[in-house]
Length: 606
Image 1: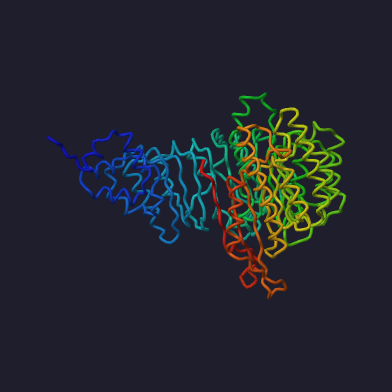
Image 2: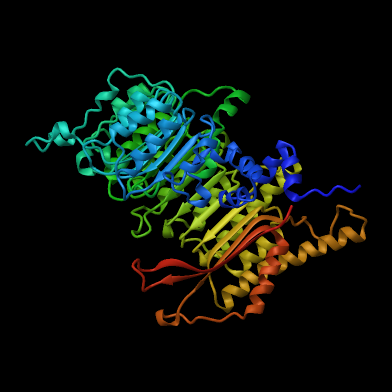
C-alpha cells in the first residue's frame, strides 16, 4: 500500500536542525504566513526562539507594542537579548515597552538601542529592575532637554556590567538654573562620585546643549572607568581642559587604546573600519606577541572651528604617545598646519601603520610647501626601523602634495601597501610614473625574498586628473599585475577620459586572456608570455563625472553598447567592481554636491 505524505506532515516531521535552517532564511512576515497554514506549523514557527533575539523584528519594521502582544506566550524570557526603539513622537510609547519587558521578565537583555526624545528616570528604573545586571551595551540618541531624562552618569552607576555606552543628547542641569549664568555651564555628574566601573571599555559622550558644556570637565568620567579603551568626545566641549587632557588619560585611563575627538556629530565619530577591526583584535595580538607598553594607539581628530583647541590637544598627545601610535587620522586646520606637522616630523613613530591627513575641503591649507616633505625626509633620516607606514592617505591638500613629495614617500616608506590621493593637484603624470617604478622595484625585491607583503597593493586616485594621464594608466595596466585594489574617481566622462580608462581595462583584460591561453597551451605551465603574471584585482572602482554644458563643459554621450563592453572587461579583470557615473547638483540645496546618476556593481561567484 502506498502512503502519501503532505508537505505539512513532511516539514513537521523533520529534525529541529532542519527547521532552524529553513526558518532563518525567511523574514518575520514570511514566517507569519507559514504559521497560518495549520496549528502544528503555528507552534513550530512561533516557538522558534532565535527570531525573538532582537525586538521588535527589525526586518519587517514591526512595532513593539501592541504588535508583539499576540506572540508574548511563545517568547521565552531568555530569548530576548536586544531591544531597539526609534520613535520620537509618542512619549508614552517607551513606557509601554518598558512595562511589557518587565511583565514578560525579559531578564537576559544585554543591548539597548534607543532613539527617543525622552528616556526618563522612571523608565530606566523599570529597565534595570528587569535586566540591569546583564546590560552590556546602551546607546541613547536624540534625548531632548527634559528635566526627568536620564543622564550618562546614572547609566554607569546602575549598570555594573556595562561594556559600551554611547550617549547622544542633552543633559538637563536643573540644580544650576539660578541667576548665575556661568554656573549653568558647569555640570557635576554626582552619580560618579567614588564610583569605579571596572567593566566599561567603550565610552562616547555627545552633548547637544553645547552652550552649557563649553567648560565640560571629563575627569569624573575618566576617573570612574579605569579599564576604558575607547573614548569619543566632541572637541568643542574640551576648550578648558585642552592642556590637561593628556595628563588625565595617563593618570585615570592607562589602558586607553583609541581616542576620537570630533566637532560635527555626523563626522569623525568612529574609528575607520580597518583600524577598528584591529582594535577589536587587540587582545588576540597581545596573546601572540610580546605585550606592548600601555599607550594610546589610535588618534582621530576631526574639527572645523576649534583649531586652537585641536592644536593644543594634538601636540600634547603626540609628545606623550608618539612611540605607541598605530594610526593617526587628522582633519581640519587645527592639525593640518605648519606647527603640528613640523612637530610630527621631529619625532619617531616606530609603530605607526596608518596615516591620514585631510584638510577642510572648502578652505585652502595654510601650509608651507616643504612642511609635508620634511616629515618623510626626517623619517628617512631616522632609518627604516622608524618608518613602518603601510597605509597613507592625503586628502584635499592641493598643491602641497607634489612630485617631490611623492618621490620622498617612495624612498622613505618602504613598507607602503595602500596609497590614497584626493584633490592633490601638485602631482603630474611623470611624478606618478616615477613613484610607480619605485614600487615595482620594491615588488621585485620582496618577490626575491619571498615576502609578498612588502609592496604596494592598493592605490586610490580621486580628483587627480593631472596624475591620471594615459601613460600612468598604461603603466599600471602592463607593469603592475600584482595590484589588488584600484580606485579611480573623478575621471571626466568625455572621449579623452573614457578612452584612457577603457585602455587601462582593455590592456589588462587582454593580458589576462593571453596568460590563460598560454597556460592552456603549455598544460598549465606557470611561465607566461608576459614578464609578470597579471592577477585578478580583488576590487576595481572607476567613477566618471558628467559635466553639463550649461556650466562650461560639453557632455559627451557614450553609447550604451560601449558602456556594456567596458563593464564586461571590468568583469574579466576584477573579482568585485563598481562602475559609477556622477554629476554635480548645481541647483540643489548644497551647491556642487556630488550626486550619483547610476552605479553598477558586480561580484564574481566564488
